[in-house]
Image (cartoon, rainbow, N blue to C red; front, side):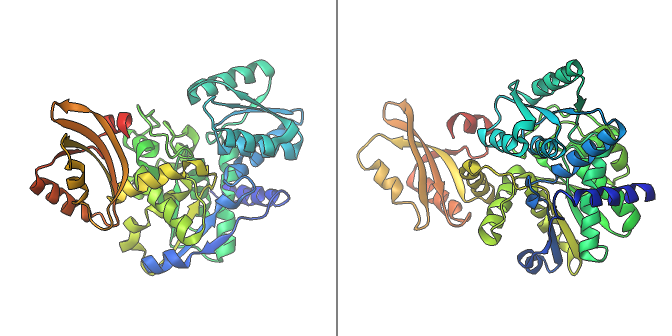
Length: 415
């Protein structure tokens, strides 16, 4: 691994002409909460607000060094990788053709275009990423361009390894523990490679979104496997299949080192970091912080580095994030209430609400019988325990209701 760590340092030094090292910041709020010395490696503060820039620049530089005639690169991405490639194309003065799904939010398209300027051509193709990827690869073959993979590439992994080189230099010592997000595995493989040589005593914990646990599945099978279903909410890390090259470097990981983060819980972490610390994180960027409560018994008094991998968050998603955070915390629920069709029935129901209970949604669905109507009602409250009191009061008053908060089928159609 010595050669890899040396190459990673060279790659890190090559980046300095384009952007400064991202900050390594001690976080007093998290440190006090967990009784540990917790530092955040702020990859959300690169010029494109994610670590993806490192791999794109490093791979493009090394490919062009091997073949100076290369002047056209292609990628498929709906987010951070696209922005990193666009930035690199502008810096190196080469052409870039970036394929993005038709469903990509306009904000991400605009940012990619802003980073790449006249050097990039953005093509919106396919409703699903697999369709976009196939179109990009077909175009690449026809155009004689070079495809730049988001994580399954040795040069990309080397570029991401620069995060670890900076971290060790900035901290001035080896941390006891580094917590890493995992999607396709490029960042995790690169950092793990450097630490294995430069800080072999440092422990690692890998965090995946619960709805996209591709490393967990690969470790169980002994090889990369394709997940049958992926929850795309954590779009920066929700990958159906971990890369073959990253997994080759991570195959020896103990499955106990891999933690899963529920998507709704991540939302609570994002909201807290925004409200308390003023730090804007995308869902994938919050993964490493989200699992700290799980690690609390093991990290007291230790030095811990959490890699916050990105901050490309569209604030139009904030209501959804807040909603999911409240539901996970048990402070918001949805009910279908069978309401008698008589004067005063609604007033009777409202009289059962507590002083911090708030109706956030009220919608008549249909009459389910001559004398009753079905109502969809959403309630927010200050403390999760308040729902036990409310449900007891409903029962005593003779109301009939159904809690559909966790019913995925009904929630998809009604909420």
